[in-house]
Amino acid sequence: MRRGVLRALPPIVLTAGLLGAWELYVELSGVEADLLPAPHAVAAALWQNRGLLWSNFTVTAEEVVLGLGLALACGLTMAVAIHLSPLLRRAVYPLAVGSQAIPIPVIGVLLVFWWGFGIFPKLVVIALICFFPVLVTTVDGLAAVDPDQPKLLRTLDASRWQAFRFAELPSALPAALSGARIALAVGVIGAFIAETTTPTSGAYPGLGREIVTDINFATPRAYAGTVLLFAFAIACFHTLTIAERRIAPWSIQPRGEPR
Amino acid sequence: MPAKGAEVPTELQSRLQTPSPQEAAAGEIALKDVGHGYRLGRGATVQALDQVSLRAARGELVAVVGPSGCGKTTLLELLCGLQTPDRGSVVCPPAVLMPQRDLLLPWLSALDNAALALRIAGLSRAKARTRAQSLFAELGLDGFQHARPRELSGGMRQRVAFARTLLSGKPVLCLDEPFGALDAITRGEMQEWLAETLARERRTVMLVTHDVEEAILLADRVVVLSPRPGRVIAELDVGLARPRVRTDAEVTALRERALDALAMGARA
Image 1 (tube, rainbow over the protein chains, first blue to last red):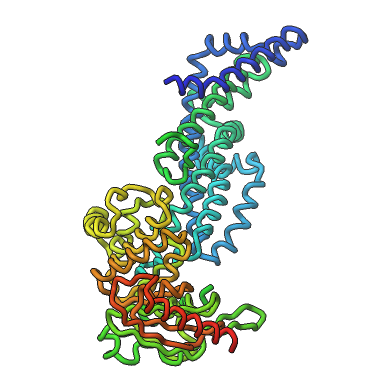
Image 2: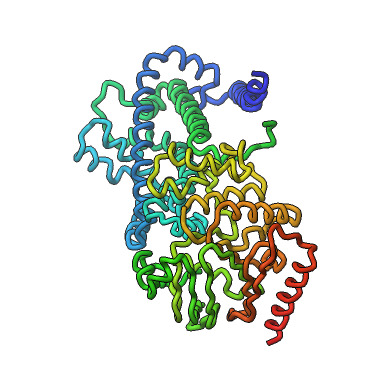
């Protein structure tokens, strides 16, 4: 319990310091509230608009979680396929790299034309942005298996599938999880891009579109929405770190903690 | 690095390598005029083994000693069917390799690592664990079932690797410098341990080592290879009662003979 408090202290102190500096800057510089609202104004906006912001937030959170799921599924499948087939590697890898350069507005309208105003086009945008780190780290992780390991497994009569299942796959898991963490960090901004490039018909358009609407005439509310995205990214990252400890416990280095 | 030939499926290889069913059925190892080399690229090749002929009877422990790079590891890979010889013939019953490094899988517990061959053979995790469990106690590993490899000492890791090798159930064990990476004291302990274990679990063993003393302490017969390309330059029958003690006059005498043979090979 005490250790938990001690661990949480540095980020709390830093955040408090930054908020204080921000408040002071707004106070002393006289910058206009439309340009940069003070933290207390943002906090007030957050409280006053809690219903609206929360409803939009749940839309965005769902997009991020499902979009990341889609990105993971695509990234991992492609990584395994590329690992097993040198032909696919040559064919697919350059296109995967190129896909990262596509400005999303170019295809946003097309995605809506194909799949309508629902959530799916947004998931596609998020997956397109997020699959790449998963793909690259997993391909490298799969290739990094000890080259003597397959030899040993062959003398134990392992099939290709068994060698993959017992050696390559678990050996690539920590790398794949690192890729997932990077994907998650860009996933939230991915959802913002998705919402602002593909129109929606839902009752709540999501936090991203809400922020864009608010930024000109309700600046504190736009900031309040940003605060929610900020906190959400941190929460997701922590969840994944905890999951990693369960999924790949061997990859966590002990840090001199007493056993 | 395995040559391209290593890609041949195992079934095909074993058919290619079985000119004499009688010998294989008897659990015998027979190498006849085996030569093997590696391509280095740009057309250059390195000859690892040249005209190697040797036999091992069923249940016999043959140690192969020689300077580094004389093709000892290649010899074991030929026996295990990981490579096919360029020349000559290899007859060997199913063989399992215990490589120089333990190659334990870091994500499996010690017990699951030992039981790997059983899992590969299609047993469920629970059944494989039960089967491995009894051997674990015999090998002095009791209490370490759930430890991960990185929590084990070097000696313990080699024991787990040896348990994995034994549990493959194959009649021939190919041990590649099994104690090469251990400190002198642990190595001595492990040699005694291996001698005891093999006295209980009789198998045909091909032990590769550069430690002449280890070869004489453990083996029924010692084969001395020359520097690259490896050829057989001496064969010593050990024929001493077990357990053997490294300071015994007979052990030291055999050691001198083996070292002399190695020195002659190096000069030739």
